[in-house]
Image (cartoon, rainbow, N blue to C red; front, side, top):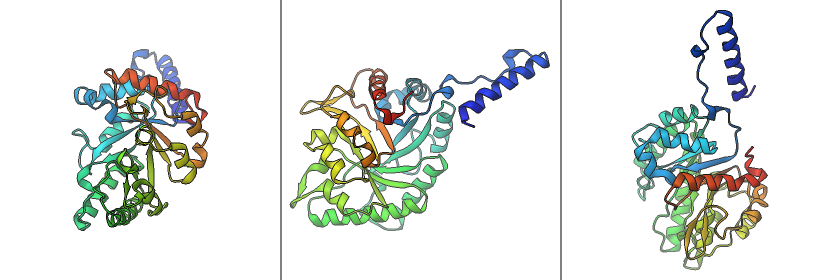
Length: 299
């Protein structure tokens, strides 16, 4: 039985018991409306509403749930706290709103050139906290300095080792691109080098569509060239040479990309809204735009 059906039937049974025992219906448990929402495959990166979270953490999450997002991705997590809360506490709040924690972007401090025990302990702690909260993905969201081919090789090897540590904890490790990955180092496009020199069983790539496009990359060509490597997308939209837009209002060809979703191995789509005065209004535009794509499973 589905979770939402169980809740609905349980509430009906309780109501019947209240009538039989002449108890007031006000004694019935309150069922949050967001709990009744159909599940879909669209999440939201909380950095989109970071300023709002700082003012009203729970209220901001509720607004995202009301829009319809089924999961959230946290940011800047290094194994300790996220905005003063353990991930398990965040997950509990989300569960009460009908959402889940899908994963996190990791903090810059966790990836170190010093591959000693301290760093591996940090990764293990990050994974343990994430696993306890029901999360599945730990994603490195910034590119360390890479000025030579040797730098690229060290980074790719390092990513494979991080991937091993995460995998042992039941967590998938990935890299999130921005624009810098599309630069060339000694004849190697950084993004291609990392994809080609990391183990697909240990490292996935969270494809930020808008940033890739802004850097001059052909997103469709990447999906065709590396099937199965982009299991998670960051749905961002950009106007070339003029920055972030709401989904559908930039130059990203979402129709062509979603036609390749299966080939890409796409498992989850995470919206990130990087501009706009009213971020919640922008996020709603993003969510509603995705309704037309069957993959998203938005009812």
